[in-house]
Image 1 (cartoon, rainbow, N blue to C red):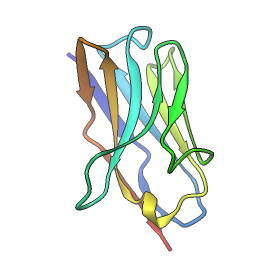
Image 2 (cartoon, one colour):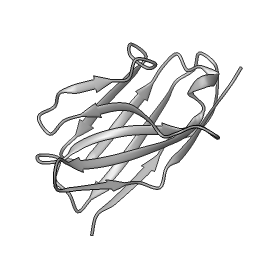
Image 3 (cartoon, helix red, strand yellow):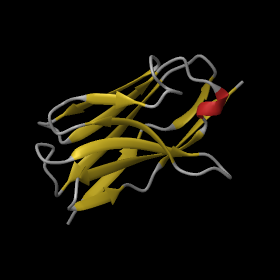
Image 4 (cartoon, rainbow, N blue to C red):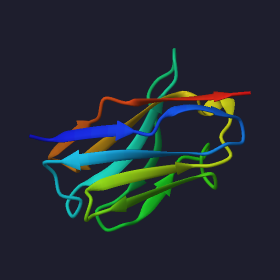
Length: 116
């Protein structure tokens, strides 16, 4: 059974930092790409960042240079380091595991709120 559990969200002032974690079970990082998405109230879910099974990373334009995605294969955990946070980063952040053409799984989300 696949499970993705996000943690690390909270309330932070603009300019601050947070690190999100996504603990995965039931999947292998060697074959799954891992991604972070976010959804603000009234908005569609937005892609934030991806780290592939091979370790390559990609970022959405709105977070490039501020956010860093990484993974610890031994702990089966993916991280999203978020720096220089802005009020517009406020959203529920979701972790996603994707094996292209096979399956995808989502976590339950963690709330990030950035105050101005």
